[in-house]
Length: 172
Image 1 (cartoon, rainbow, N blue to C red):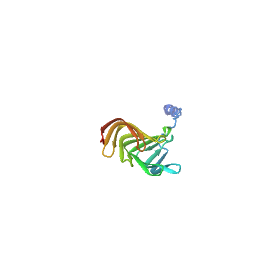
Image 2: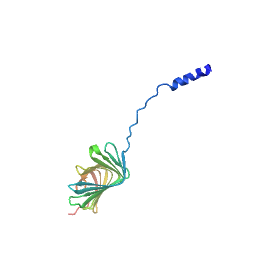
Image 3: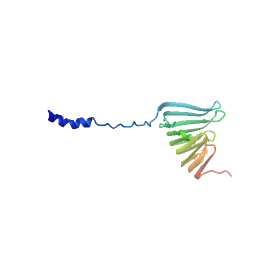
Image 4: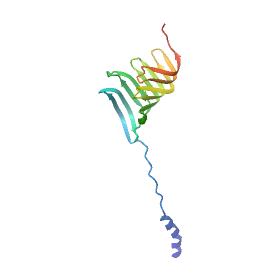
């Protein structure tokens, strides 16, 4: 019997040893998940922006991810629809108050009948500006302009293409 006890003693001593305490893992995923969201941004009791998204993840730092895309409508001071923006994927950076749209980004100016297409676009709501360093295509009435990089008003009423290409009709 003593022989068996001596053989078990190392296993018992090992089992009673210090156990390593592990630090808990910090969760970095979304705190909230919203489906079929419809949100309105207003100024002075007037709707300025309408937002639709199928899925939204909100994180602890205030950032938001829109993995199934986003649709925005921008209105003028009279409530008239000025422009729209769609993207297959979007992200809001709270600390910068800046949005990023990716994958088939499209901006339409309703009044001017113009359309911007690119693969990535940033929007600063405070400045009401959009910008990108990626390749852009702008379709106007009868004209198509290509270029690398763009800065513009969010309604596409005024824009500058950094490195433009394309042909334009000029009436003399």
